[in-house]
Image (cartoon, rainbow, N blue to C red; front, side, top):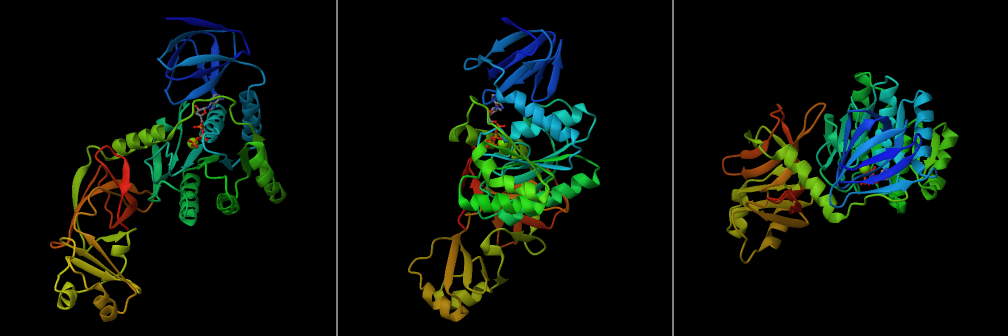
Length: 415
Ligand SMILES: Nc1ncnc2c1ncn2[C@@H]1O[C@H](COP(=O)(O)OP(=O)(O)OP(=O)(O)O)[C@@H](O)[C@H]1O
Ligand SMILES: [Mg+2]
């Protein structure tokens, strides 16, 4: 295996896939220290700057697309660790990280956590990115307590998870803020500090700016790390309410993830949480189903609908402005306008039985929610069939805004 020699203080950038064995000396990756005999695996979708703390020899095994670059003393990593040290030495309670997609938010969060661990503290990380979802499954906000060396957030295990039900933060601002607050409360009860809050990369428009600002104002971190000087100009004003705002630069070259890579990473997480799930039956009458308009209205007797249009739906419900139905097959010649008058609604919406198959969902618990997948809702017998790995004693099943294909890719759920 090829070996490389690093002088003390030397920096290199390694692009995965790669495996590094430390033969002699000591190196640092995102604040985690590795000495002789230890090994680091770098995934094909990751890159890291490595700093030699002592004169070191590394055995390097590069995969087909793996590469190593020399990095100079101008590498932002030196600045990152200096700022991270300063923050951790300042006895922080809540640190929030903000930056664009792929700017290094999760890496900085891990760096802060590793430095806190090195100092004997008990950090918590909140993965507030519903789309990338490094710790928990996609569509969730997750809390984790890192305990050992970690260079990739995806290897952490969740302590608690909160379901948002979408992979986009847009339109879910208050739910996300609420979920992050609840997870902070859990971490405080568990005596964890500092809490490091990693956020999603939606920052480049006005609404994103309003969302991130509201998040900061509601969470009130004592430290805010902003990646990139353009964003820093926007968020530095929080210094005036005693939030310590620090700017860092994104890595100059890094392994970027395209849409396909991100879709692949999400599908791997869905598999991890859903594959091998056990079948569970719940009664429609004793379970609250939420997240989908069909289940939020008052029940309507299907026979009343049959009298008007000659078709008896399997299920019907009514919100103040819409009548919802589930029917066995598409309605031919629908005289749906007749229903509007009869039920005093402005809209009629119907779904064909089976529309719910493979809907992504969560079992809602007190502290933590758990992913599930709907197999079928049998409206005739009033039974919800779903699969989940965690048989919590739940009475609320919340549907996501989408379904999952056999390959665990998101697909449209009629809404
Ligand atoms: N110092 C560094 N040198 C080189 N590459 C780095 C460095 N730090 C992070 N990276 C790489 O940059 C990429 C983006 O990092 P990271 O996942 O931390 O960003 P992010 O902002 O959390 O992204 P996302 O928006 O997808 O959540 C990753 O491939 C990561 O391995
Ligand atoms: Mg991230």
